[in-house]
Amino acid sequence: MRKLAIIALALAGLNANASSLFESNEDAIEYRKAAFQLIRYQIGDMGDMLKGKVPFDAKRFEQRANNAAQLSTIPWEAFIAGSDKGDTDALPAVWSDRETFDKKAQMFAQYAQELAVAARSGDKAVIGPAFQNWAKGCKDCHKSFKD
Amino acid sequence: MRKLAIIALALAGLNANASSLFESNEDAIEYRKAAFQLIRYQIGDMGDMLKGKVPFDAKRFEQRANNAAQLSTIPWEAFIAGSDKGDTDALPAVWSDRETFDKKAQMFAQYAQELAVAARSGDKAVIGPAFQNWAKGCKDCHKSFKD
Image (tube, rainbow over all chains, first blue to last red):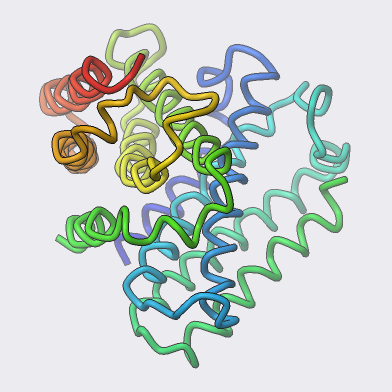
């Protein structure tokens, strides 16, 4: 529950805090890209373990899922006003339909947290659906908000 | 205690797991740079709050400290063999004196965790020394291991 509270806290403060973190739109774009990149690696390794491309290691999976849960709260505050221009694949809808975007971001972070909880079981039958759910959250958001 | 257990778990699996995560040395370098970059932003915002450059916001500080605690466990597994060559500032000592490097990495992650605990107090008198301790951990490691 502590973790869920932390995530709720993290998501509550997303936009209001952005301005003091970034000195430029380029900074903000770089920041969110770094976060998504780290997320991709967690997904990749977890996906490989579940598909049997590499041996399933419950402890490593749990580590990846914990990373994922924290990293999934990080990129959102960097979608600051003005950072639709520049080296970014973010679609204008991020800013024109911010409510939907924020909701999807919040669901994504929540699914990642649920995956981290599932990962503690060490049971692939529990972990698999939680992983799929989270991965679906990526695609669902990209469909509307990423070029 | 749960969080400390997670960090111990994360650090225990650092090197053994690296090979299945990265397809190339460039991937590994990119990964650790992304993590350090995100860490720098957390440090920057927390430092600004403590120095009074921006108003101190206990909730935001706690969020940054939680980010820092998790992010501080992430870069280390990416110092894989061979990734001393390429677009990196890592010094050869990372690989030639791995024991010291790993120990400093572990201390850094531990200080970040202690900062996250201190941040829950919302009290600058408690948070300040914990922040300094963690920031010192950056410099202490850079001195020996970063160009």
